Length: 332
Image (cartoon, rainbow, N blue to C red; front, side, top):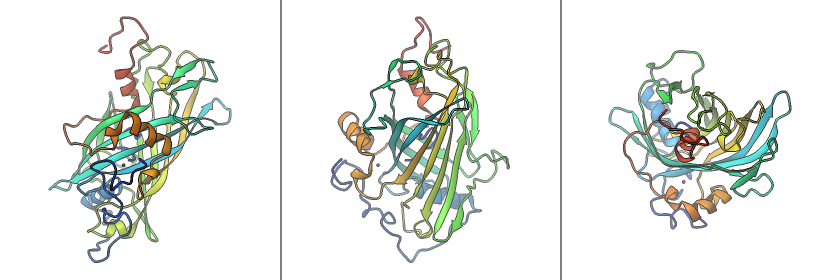
């Protein structure tokens, strides 16, 4: 999720006394409440201010990363049938952003996404496919490093052999000044953040005939975000809280093994997304427990390094799950 691109994005222990490298809400000016004094309203026409506002909302511009969480339900839509809830989806991002001398923003983070049982809320390790009758192994998404740079012009994201311009609403394109659709409404800034991808499926029909949904894929993600103007406009605040909605549409997940099912459908997810401003209990509970048990490093401070580009769930699946076809080479 993603957070497929730059995606929404920090134990029973508190943030201050628990996992090394993370800060509490109280230690992050602006998470609990905005200060007064160094106030300058966001100039939504200035690319530098656009990046500044986005960086402190979507993570922090402080020295220690912060967490953002998401949780919700994914629905299956088959033909003209009503949308049917199939499983929950929850995770978090652990993000720090660094503003560069030229005003660009270095994004450094980690992320994860887990599928959950609708009845119990517990993480699914196996799932009974109602269309095929097959019990399948669930492939949860863990990314211990994502890195990239947002510059002062609209960024083109390379995803496989495709290109994506964020917030592409048919007006302009890559190379224009980097401006996002900030809307000052009352005491809030409203912001939309959208990606619509189309590229060659890395989970190929030749290599994974049951997992693959076809030669091309077109996942998209859509966020509606709300953040306090007081926190964004206060230049002493390093991390502004936000809440919002997160929607994702895409073909069947490869782990569902729907490639030869003959069932023509798509998945649609609706999730809450939010900056974690309290303690670790605000991380989706099942996710927190599983990460503490298996991958506590995802809570640790992210480290900068080479840009890795957009690495989504399909790419991870193709890299980590052996092909179904004997002798198939991933390099084809």
